[in-house]
Amino acid sequence: MCIIELRIKPYLVDFLKAMYKKDQEIIASKNNYVGIVLEPILQKSPRKFRPSKNTNLRIKLTQVDSKSMKGSKDPRIYNYISDTGIKQFERHIDKLFDQIFFEFMSNSVVPNPDAANGYNKGKNIIQIKECIQEFMNKYKLDPDHITFDKLQKSYYRYKALKKE
Image 1 (cartoon, rainbow, N blue to C red):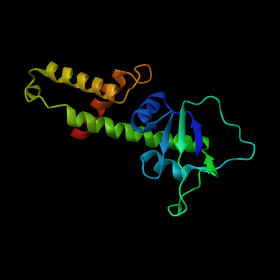
Image 2 (image 1 turned 135 degrees about the vertical axis):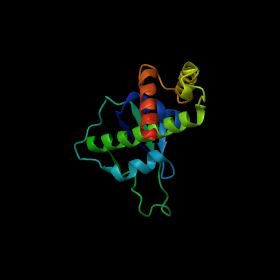
Image 3 (image 1 turned 90 degrees about the vertical axis):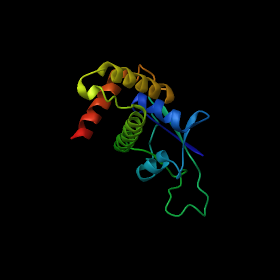
Image 4 (image 1 turned 90 degrees about the horizontal axis):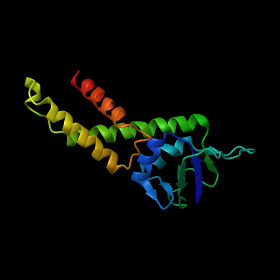
C-alpha cells in the first residue's frame, strides 16, 4: 500500500471523494478512472524528494498482484507525481467533472415547450437551479469551493455550444 498526496482544485477534491472515497483516502486502482489516469504519470521518486505539506488530496495506490502486474507500475517504486503530472491529472479530473455534470443536467432538465415561444421561461430557470443544487448535494460540493453561478454559467455555455 502506498499513499500519494497532492493539491488540486478544492471542488475536484470534493467530487473525487464523493465518487471514490473509502476510509480516509481515495482508492486508485487499474479498474477506476483515477487509477487509469494516474498510472502513466507516476514516476520513480527522486532521491531527495520531500513531500509537500500543502496538499488537499490523499490517494491510496493499490498493490497489484504478480499475475496482473504485466504492464502496470509497482506503486512501491512508482509513487511520485511531478508538478506537470499533477496539472495533467487535474485536467483529466476536471474533464470528468464536466462530463458528469453535463450528462446529469441533460438527463435532469426537462425542456419547457412554452419557453421556445417566449412563455414561462422562468419555469425552466427554476428547474435548472433545482438540478444544479441537486448535483451539488449528490457530489457533496462545498459552495465555498465552487459556486452555483459558476456551474450555471458552465451549463449555459454547454447548451449554447450544443445548439451550434
